[in-house]
Image (cartoon, rainbow, N blue to C red; front, side):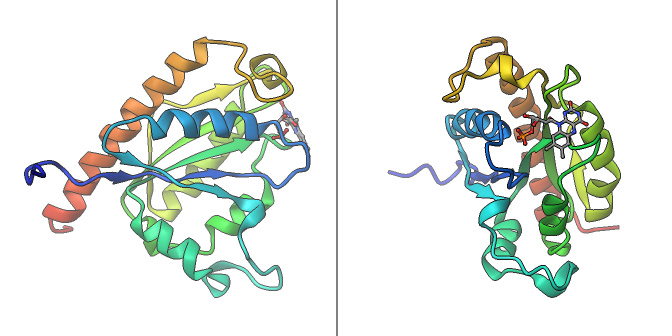
Length: 192
Ligand SMILES: Cc1cc2nc3c(=O)[nH]c(=O)nc-3n(C[C@H](O)[C@H](O)[C@H](O)COP(=O)(O)O)c2cc1C
């Protein structure tokens, strides 16, 4: 018999934030996606900015894609896996995120930065913080920094640095906790 007291599953989709051919962030994103799918009581979905059917002759909610919007509405939290491009975020990720707004309000977001250099996307994460806030998302205090990405994953995406199992686990622990707390708040505590 189903346990009627069990909390409903959390839905935490992951967005891979670059369309670049040969992107190494995909290795990081696939690894994080596999880890989140292992969590009990959590569903995820793979979203690739390359695959989103967005127009480029306009911006913001005018270009909203119904399926992406529905997924963001259903989400309890988001995982962004984002490479650092000239210390900033890929334009296509911002274009995609800007197409929704109300869908994100008071939901948790965790960010994994990816870089060729040693800082693990620390600068792109910092640059994303004001954007997240303006979108109504609530950022975890734990990030994952995939620095020197070529040393972390092999050519076919195999993990070479086992430390990232623990790092991603801590990241997911906080994100899942925040997703639960914020969902409880959205569902049970009227806004001020
Ligand atoms: C346009 C562009 C700008 C980049 N700027 C930086 C940078 O500021 N800092 C850095 O560490 N790596 C930089 N890189 C290298 C990426 O971090 C590297 O390609 C890494 O593998 C993650 O991006 P990827 O998923 O596109 O492969 C840049 C790459 C591109 C394509």
